Image (cartoon, rainbow, N blue to C red; front, side, top):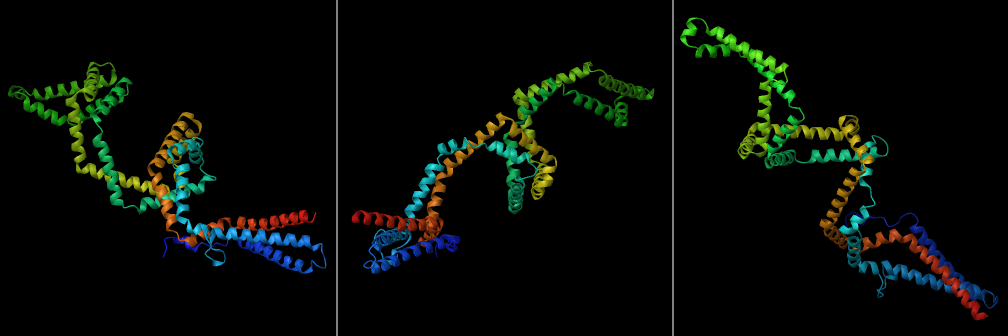
Length: 419
């Protein structure tokens, strides 16, 4: 049993090929019959010599071309004549030559990059994304179903573990302290820290109201027995609470309050320490590692993965709904940007060109080996039938043309001989 697979069931009789073979063979038989008839009648009708010469040469030309065409694919009449059945005997060499041709003309990084320069991949992707309906709908739905089936078919536990592990490793390799410090410094510089300060002041005011009994108890415990005896501890607690409430109100109403300034100075110092102070950066990294080792973080990552997986499958199963929602707006916006922005389009095309050229350089030899091994695995009959079916109609035209041209040459030679 060969490795040809479905190719062994290939039907060699494409429409028109068998019919043209009958025409070519019928024309050869007709020339043979015409030669026999004119040869018998020539003594009575001398002018039939011209017809006989045409038929004779046509018969020879048709037979020669029949032999040449047949010799490409098999032994004529089953006779093992040398240099016949060329394709079956040289199947492996043809496969190697085809693989080499593909490698030298399609899978060389330099050639691929040159060919890719004329292809505007970014514009095509932009048109595809920005068009919610039309000719791209069928392709989008097919691609969406394929993505959904692939995501559902993959092992959820293994794939989820890979994704969660990749996220955790990415976070672990990223030093977060400088990022936090830069973000905080940028927020202070653009006055985006003000809402955060005001929220902190409001939180402080609510904390005072919520913890008033606790504050009074703390004052009572720390007051001397003289104050408690004179019942002055309650008045002291009232004064402290009133002073703190007044402070929060003044801080909230006055953007230039000194305490607010001190808070901004503290935040600025913290932003600088997060970016440049090794002790602070090391402390934050320690907190990050403790956080990643916490079981609740692993559970959060698992919930995040499950929600993301469900969202991907739902969007892929219903691409029209996905394109109609916010995701669709994002995709259409991205498509419009790809179409209209030449800088982004050039960058995407350059990235695509480099990626395809890199794939050709990395996997070109593997593709060449695959083509060569696949053709070598086909049996000779399969290759013969497939090639003969692909060019069979033109090959029969060669036979017909050979018959006619041979007859015309014979007629001219007979005419010259007569003259």
